[in-house]
Amino acid sequence: VRLVRVLSVVLPLLVACLLADVLLRNLVGGGRLDPYLLLAVWHGAAGRKADGMLVGGLAGLVQDLMGSVVLGTHFTSKVVVGYLVMLLVERLIPGQLLTHAVLLTFGTLVEAAVLLGLGAMLGRQLLPGSLGLVLVAVALNALVGCIAFAVADRVRRRRERVFGRGARGR
Amino acid sequence: MRADGRPEPFIERRHALVFVVLLASGVLLTTIGVKSPERLGPFEKVGMSITGPLARASHGIGSLLGDGWAGFASTWSAHRELGAALTEVRDLRLLLMDREALHAENERLRRLLGLAQQLPMRAIPAEVVDRTAAPDCVLLIDRGTDHGAHPDLPVISPDGVVGKVLSATATMAKVQCVIDPDAGVAVRVGDDGAKASAIVKDASGRTCRLRYLESVGEIVEGDRVVTSGLDQIYPRGLLLGRVIRVVRSGPGQEVVVEPAVDFRRLDAVVVLRPDEEASVRGHGSPPRVAERAP
Image 1 (cartoon, each protein chain N blue to C red):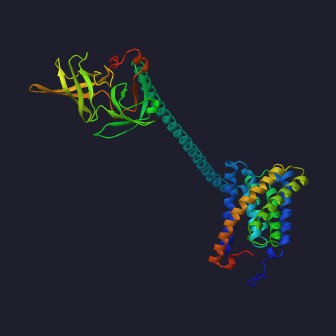
Image 2: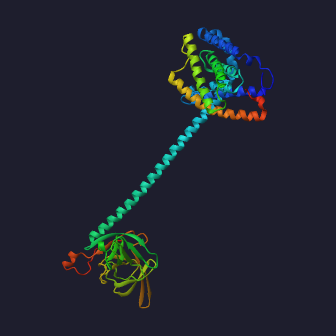
């Protein structure tokens, strides 16, 4: 069960790295879709209580090391996203498409707010782009995230059938 | 406590505290990253050495996927261009065929017009709309009595004599070809028509025979056979065909004639109608026309 939990973090992280690289280089607007954010939101929504912020922090750190100018920005924003999503999901019906859409929209906006706040605090522009691009990011993350979460939900249910309820987060 | 009875680990029990610690770490990291990034150099180096292989692997796979995607897009684009080019080629071929058909029809109509202008008769151009198979050889044309195509009027083509109108309705007419077994045409043989006079009859397949032959000179293969006008149907001097075989048996001889017209490919004809003005001027007998080369 522990191995499955580790794999459920590491494998999506690898996929997120790959996806970010492919999207950034090949698709117009690919930079607006944030696979690391999807990872943080998913673990915040479906994992145990601290999973969201821990996995989000790890994903943010990898994102910082692989492509950020200022180290720590994505780490901070993903920790906040993971934690707040964990708090919000307790008030929503889990596993629903609308829940996923709300969480993804919320996560993207929270990240933008954190980057904006950090930038204001440190006197530096940390949020890339304008409000319009944030809305594009919201739409892209919500669309791709809903599809990815639906697939991940199926995989999780199958995993629960194979390994039992112990594999489940909450 | 968890559902299975085990106590929650500290990190879950004190998640708010963990969050505050992580958040403070993040803010501190970011602040150092902004204010004095050189202090994070060693940390960044260690991190990069861990994530470097991951970055290289993802970059390699990304390049592979990107190149594959670019190749697919390029192939797809080429496929679409090929499809468009093939469609264009097909359209151009159809256009070319259409133009060739128009050219052939134009040429045929020019020849018909030229022939009609040579004859001292009124010409009624018509198109062949149907034909019967052997042994009878009958054509159906798209001109009838409304257009002046009455029974027993001669029908010709630029190549020679076709036959005569057998019967007609207001808008259609039936033409009996000269190679019909029941047809008969009064003819002369020879370049000047002086070798013999006869009647073309007894068609068999694509050939006819000369009957009631009154020979003056020696008939040889290749002699021209032209209408004599004695049957009061066909004008004098129209080419009917050529002698292709002469079989002598005792005092008689059998002469086989091949019509100049290819009835299988005939698609336009001219019905000849006596010109009323010419009749008034006293040209009651069938007019003589200049012989045409086949």
